[in-house]
Amino acid sequence: MEPLERADKIAVLQQLDETQVRGCTRCELHRHRTQTVFGEGDPDAPVMFIGEGPGQVEDRQGRPFVGPAGEMLDKWISAIGLTRDQVYIANAVKCRPPNNRTPLKPEVDACADYLLTQVRTVQPKVIVTVGGPATKLLLDTDDGITRLRGRWHAYNKVDPPIPVMPTFHPAFLLRSYSKDNRAKIWDDLQKVMQRLDELTG
Ligand code: URA
Image 1 (cartoon, protein in one colour):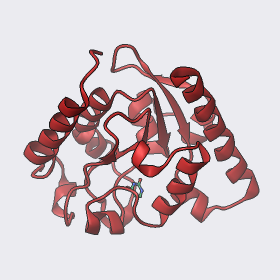
Image 2 (cartoon, rainbow, N blue to C red; image 1 turned 180 degrees about the vertical axis):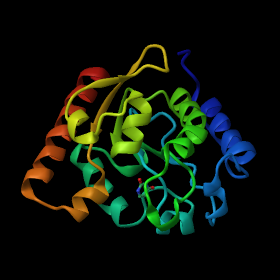
Image 3 (cartoon, rainbow, N blue to C red; image 1 turned 90 degrees about the horizontal axis):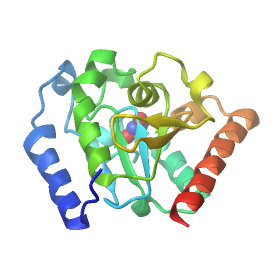
């Protein structure tokens, strides 16, 4: 990937949002949205978190991870020594699935090149996928999150490939809180922090 200037990144992301994502009708999810949720954060972020899709609060506010799952994600971001405005946050799909159901594969696929452009533009050193849909999309696999989490993988649609750490979704921890699940996620985040230290010095 050619390195990009910050101002160019901002322009590319803004153009993608305004000219393509906001008016998108590529899949049925557009019928249910209040508005699209493009993603936000530092265009030079060393780490990009990728979730599943907007929930109710996100759909109302037009921003990713601002509801209950977002409060949990904020804690995870501070666990790796960063703040929300130092990372970039996006989702596999940009429109809220009705009743917060999991987005279907054709919906994720229809939205995939928006995310690809976001990754190619931000050029993070490390990607953290939270939950199954984002992980499956980036790793191009049908394996479940329980199998994939906690190990480094690679996003190969960019050159050079970007390291990917899949972990559970914050909403999963809220639903199924246990010390064991929390410890697994903390372990995954430790690995992210170590890798970032190695890559950014
Ligand atoms: N869950 C997600 O996956 N993404 C959001 O933006 C909010 C909740």
